Length: 135
Image (tube, rainbow, N blue to C red):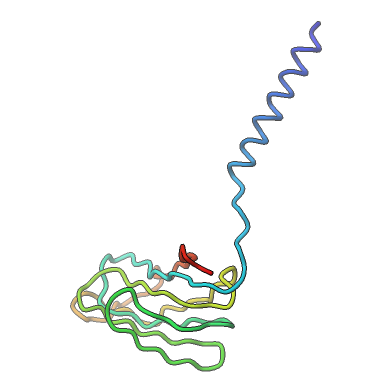
């Protein structure tokens, strides 16, 4: 009689562990052309401007969510300069050939809300997420 409760416990433990694995796993990124939203992650709060190099293949048109944007492309590098009219979060939308392979971003320079260069950039990064309407 004691074997049935042990088997039941093992079955319940197995089902619970499967539930945890299912909750923890994330769906595989869909590949193919689309648009990515890039957000400059700043440890200092609102920013005034940024210079960012995006390195990767299949990089297309880039538009800023706000402010002015200037770009220059050479080989697999897209240099981006975004200047905000009002200090805030620097965000942009980038067309790519494969949304599962975002570019590598190098933050080269950041200006504070008063247009003074930030002295250290070690904690700055760019986070990419697929845009909801990516094709």
